[in-house]
Structure formats: C-alpha cells, structure tokens
Length: 269
Ligand SMILES: Cc1cc2nc3c(=O)[nH]c(=O)nc-3n(C[C@H](O)[C@H](O)[C@H](O)COP(=O)(O)OP(=O)(O)OC[C@H]3O[C@@H](n4cnc5c(N)ncnc54)[C@H](O)[C@@H]3O)c2cc1C
Image (cartoon, rainbow, N blue to C red; front, side, top):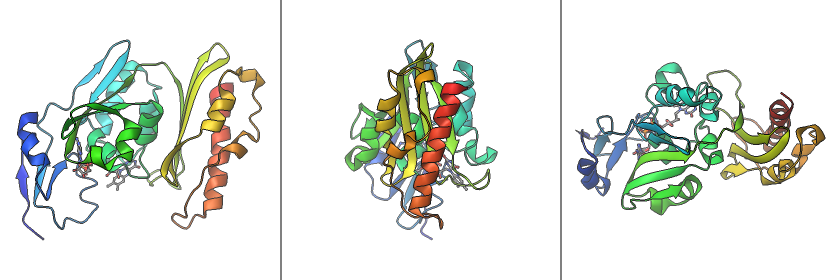
C-alpha cells in the first residue's frame, strides 16, 4: 500500500489548500473511505479538530456542523423532539460504535444507497453549506445530483427549517444490523385532522432516491378520516433494480405495502 500522509488542520483556513490537491481526501468518520480502495490516496485530512460539531437551533432553523456524528445528532435532535425524523432514522443505523464515528458530512458526500440519513434530510428539504470551490448554501437535492458542487468543496454545515412534522421512518432489513434494501421517510403536517403538507422520500430505489409525489398530492388537503389508504401505493411508480438476490418486482411490491402501512400508522395512530 502507498504511504499516506495525514493532516490535522485546526482551522477551516488550513483545510482550504488541501481541497485542490490530487489524491488528498477529507476524512470524516473514515467508514466509507476504508470500504473503498485506498489506491491513489496520498493524503487524508482529518476533520476531527475543526469546529464542525456545533448545533444551533431557534424557532425557525436547525443547523448542525458536518463533523457531528450520528450519535451526536440523535442526542442534539432529541432536545428538540424525541420523535424527530432524524432521531427515528438514525437510532437504528449501523451499530453503536459506528454511530459514534459516522459523520453527517461524510455521509452527505458519499450518499450510500442504504443511508439512513439522506431520506430524512431530503424530506426536510435541507440545505448544505459549502466551503472551497463553492462557498455557498445549496439544497441537498441539488448537491447530490451535481458532481461539480461536490468537487473541491468541504461541507461545513447542514441546516433545515424547524417545523413540527409528524414523522415515520421505515428500514427494509432482514436483521437489525443489516444495510437497508430501501428506506421510507414520511413527514406530515396536520392541522387537527387536516393534512396540510406531506413529504414522502424513498432511498434505495433506482436513481438512488425518489419523492413519491403522486401520493403526496393525494394526501394534501384531505382529512385523515376521509383517506382511502388501501391501494394508494399502486400509484407509487417507484422502480428498483435487483439487489442482494431480491427481484425488482418484489422490492416494488414491498415498498408499496410499507408506504401504505406507514401512512396508515401516521394518520390513524
Ligand atoms: C459495517 C457498516 C455498516 C453501516 N451501516 C449503515 C447503516 O445501516 N445506515 C447508514 O446510514 N450508514 C451505515 N454505514 C455508514 C455508511 O456506509 C458510510 O460509510 C458513512 O455514511 C460515511 O460517513 P463517514 O463520516 O464515515 O465518511 P468518510 O468515510 O470519512 O468520508 C466519505 C467521503 O466523504 C468525503 N467527506 C468526508 N467529510 C466531508 C465533508 N465534511 N465535506 C465534504 N466531503 C467530505 C470523504 O473525502 C470521502 O470521499 C455503515 C458503515 C459500515 C462500515
């Protein structure tokens, strides 16, 4: 294996020159980097000493540093709402030791198809704050679709509106410690029994993720007691590719069944 030079910047300014260097990678939790080939990696920039663990909230916005781990995120978000979608999603991700090292920034950059973070962030319509080639905030969907934005940039923060959504999260797994075949995130804003707004995101389908717009549109403006949930998922239009010996048609069927069950749980209690 090639010799790897480690760098331990203490300020964001010290990271800047590394962003453009060939073969030099940022290191958050390192769990994705270790999974891949180390060939071609000449240097790793440890982000652990940077001020990227801040957590700020007010009545409008929540902002989290990209260096926050899954475990830190769960602890911080629990202070706002123990039933927050990020708490529900991340508490079952990977394992306790891994939740202590996996970072928000490393996950957003790498976006594994089994990610438990990305569905909630996409549903929350989060913004990603960058430093480097592009020092601005971008919507998370724009960021994940644009290789230009991901190039030579450090994610410093992620932020989203502090809205009191009702939330439901589902992981399609065979055992509790398993990469999910897909995940479902559902957010619902209710005024008494009127559904004012909803967001449904599936991660792990073809194209990596999808908003389930047809079902969102069906739910919006309806009262929970007027919903016809049975068969609602026949309109989901989600496509899957074969994964881990599971056929696309089977995954499409499972996603439909679980979307219906999730909506039923959220609307009927
Ligand atoms: C056995 C195992 C099981 C797992 N199970 C799950 C699971 O069930 N659910 C789940 O959600 N995740 C799971 N994960 C984690 C997931 O697979 C990724 O490894 C993880 O999300 C990557 O985060 P990281 O902080 O370790 O990133 P790193 O490995 O540090 O970095 C990943 C990439 O992002 C870049 N990067 C890092 N930080 C930044 C930044 N701030 N700005 C820009 N680029 C950056 C790096 O250069 C690298 O290219 C599992 C991991 C393992 C090893």
